[in-house]
Image 1: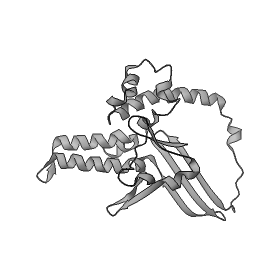
Image 2: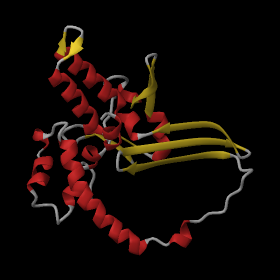
Image 3: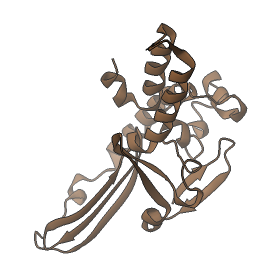
Image 4: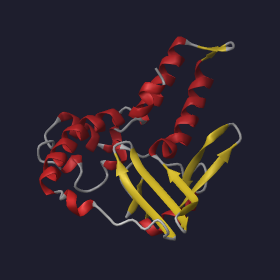
Length: 207
């Protein structure tokens, strides 16, 4: 199931993988190639979502339920939803590094590589659809195949999910830190900081 949560942890939307495309829409803007996903039922901009380590803390069986992390001060800070801020993304990632390493060690002993292979039919037709939670956040791939040729492809990656919020935040920072025709030194620092918070892959791209 795909679930969207409010900041306080209330489920605001829930739907299955097969219903994903009926519940997630994308807005186009003339000034960027990247589209802005949003929850269809709430429209744009109310339906803007954030994905990644912070949103995963609302899920059962995640970092906040790990017995080895329960007593960490960092865990308590994240568990207190009244204290959540954008900087909480980094706190959640730190907790997840430890948590994920434990999961990897467990899965190494459970995964049977021979069972992961599959027979391929190059002339097949149909639709393939998948949603998974990657370290950066939710990834969605949808393919429509006609006799082995891709006719339609739709990809929604974590950076794109967060794209609308990132752009709105940058706009607000720029408006606050304009000095004449340029940004203040503090404004430049904050903009770089806000981009890196959402997506570790963007950290290298923004240096």
